Length: 111
Image 1 (cartoon, rainbow, N blue to C red):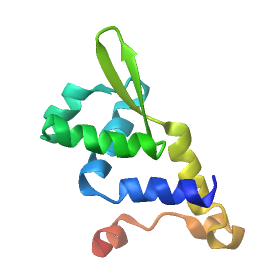
Image 2 (image 1 turned 90 degrees about the horizontal axis):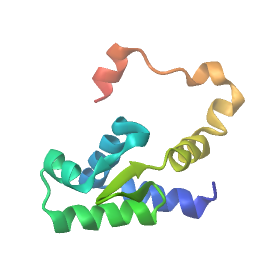
Image 3 (image 1 turned 135 degrees about the vertical axis):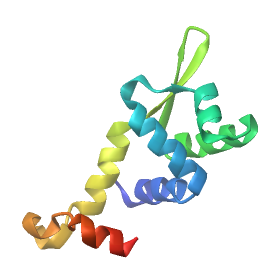
């Protein structure tokens, strides 16, 4: 992933509503969700949801596919994995053991 694509993806995710939508789509997996389902679950008006989905699509994080009469939104897992890979490719100077997740107790204190 190039730096411009990483900046675009991170910028799109740097909004509470868009991050919530993206996480919802990641949780839904490859089957995705309809726009109506996302709107209901996120509690967003259609115009607001459309604006946020557009930003996520432009960043390459979300794809839309028409299935019959429904428009299904899915997370682009390839883009997501590329972004995570970009962020961690030189993590801890190549020492993967040093990159282990923090224990649950420490994570709670940081939040």
